[in-house]
Length: 508
Image 1 (cartoon, rainbow, N blue to C red):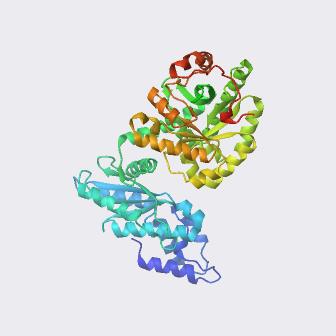
Image 2: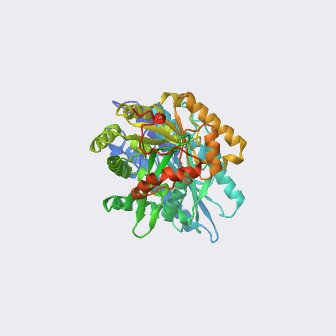
Image 3: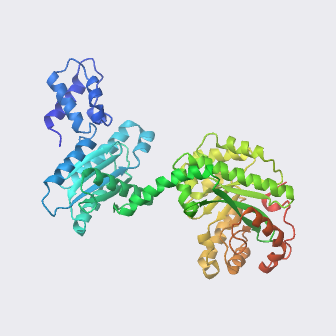
């Protein structure tokens, strides 16, 4: 812990120095070793030289804002503890990320962010063991180490108790509870030096953040492999865009009353020359963490519009072509303009473009995405909400958004003919959509009985393997040509028109 006399001298120097704006050491920004020389320049030249050196020495070792060891000092102390540890000793190193620090700063300012940071430091000091080594590793990351056997349930409980104390804390002045993610690595089973213990515990914390876990996750070797694969995939996505390894598959949507083909959803696929098929559930989240997601969207929209234009020229185009959009895409200020420019390259007056956004996205930043949607509506784009029901979206929010279509998630459709409760739930969703003048699409219809139920409860449209799996452009044309005949096997008797103006989508 810091020497009290140095703390007092530091505070006196900051508060009482002549011709210097009054400051509180607790509100100073994070200061690392790299800052120590510049820190000296921030103090008046009139203070005692000895005190000046004490201040610099203090900043070299401690975080100014919390009084905890800084990164380099924590790592050095942990290495020293490892060297001194008797044979058979096990040491747990816990990494804690404070996830909502930036949001608190943006909402309430530096005082609130500082209060939150100091509250976390206070909890760590109060709940970690008396012999714990505690440090502030970066602006939003903390760490502590204690002797703890990996296989001892009591030791693991002590680690979780610290996490629980953080989750229950309300920061004074801003009424904020820390949102934290924590991971732990053990000496000697996971690593033999402090640097690796910190690296591996941070990997476990990153996994906890990704899975929204409130537990202290233990480092596993597979976490390192996952991170390495994520890095490699990010590099390969960029190469794949240049090597034309991405392609688009198309899945038809049909009117559940008439059986007519209403539209096609364009779904991106990646076939790597060595790995084979890489699922979108793996490469899309990685692309979203970088600027690659904008290139990915541009590719998917350009290709979808290109094929819609070709089909229109053949006279067999579906009325609506749907393309999925990421939250990262919608955050761009120029997103609507980019969409408009791409649409201008492919004049397909007979086909409308529909962008599909997930329900989770709507909850992320309501005002921002509502504004983006209004911009898209202004340029003539249709909007659909995907996976509806998998998250909580308020009725008032839905009413405020310029949506056209609500897609009912597959998890509600699966086995609906065997569940009266699920049938009632879907009926309620459809009634709500009708009240808001939204059309409904049932996703993932795979059994004839599921199709029957969705027709009975009044769902407007549907898609799924029962009707057609996602297929390449040539096979999609083949589907369009054979559908009038094959639709009869699904109970439709008047699905002879494939290219039409349909009341369902309000196309004039």
